[in-house]
Length: 130
Image (tube, rainbow, N blue to C red; front, side, top):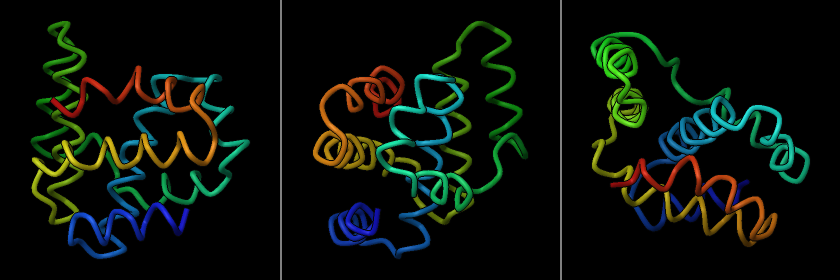
């Protein structure tokens, strides 16, 4: 996982704490959406759990309220995006960086675990970058 963090730091010009927290937010969302299927990723990359723990708590503040409201209206992707944006803001990251985080994380997982795991993540994260 250190390689992923270094990729994020060097490509996005952020610090290691922001890289860990941002990646953790993406992995937490994937874990929530994939349920048991996420175990394929944690078995191959057990350090993912550390990244998830490094992510800021979700569900609070305006982002959490917007996410909850959007989800209750049936706009699940919008709700997920609002929660990710709130998490990025709490890390002092511009939410627009999400568009750059996702492909870096997907490429790393594809190289480290394989295309099947990357495809699992892509089903959850691909719509979050747009």
